[in-house]
Length: 275
Image (cartoon, rainbow, N blue to C red; front, side, top):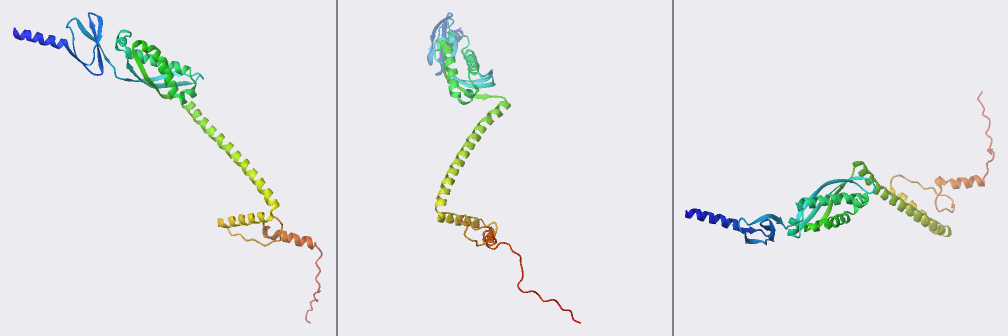
């Protein structure tokens, strides 16, 4: 009999003494009514009258939102997924105000993401993910605050578009870079043309400078070493460069001695044949 009482007392003791972990909160109900939220450590319950209805984890919970399909404001189909970090801020509200705060929070985030996609342009989704995540967090926090929850942050993980549209988007920055390159090239050509015009004015008023420039050009051509070059001296044509194979000198000779009939001064004797 003593062993029976000892056994019953041991069972009652085990039913009375409870331990709460540091990150947990136990919700105590007495005869169906909310009594208190326990703190971490050892606490006691009244057997058969009090019970632990829920154990709430107060650590930050990570939830990966599955791909949500939707149409952007500019009617482009996309798929968006995200990562949500939230925690229980008010344990009593999380238990009494909502059936399943985990599922309710996750459904609320999904709905907010789809609503955000419909109100945003594709360029905003691709380039302003942090801003879009903040909008989703603010929109969701208005609802989950009633459940005692706190949305820490929402990070837009990926925005997926069709392959054809992805190729078109990739061509757009390439075209923009090509445009900038062509504009820079045109500006360089304009600057070079202006510089050449200024140089031509200097050469026109300074023949020595033109001659020095010509000699430098000849030096650069000789330094290439790819072929043999022969320079024929010519008359001074005033252009600072030797004419090709002395054509200026030939031209001058023709101008000085116009074409005339050729007559030899000594007539050849007639050829005599032997007898």
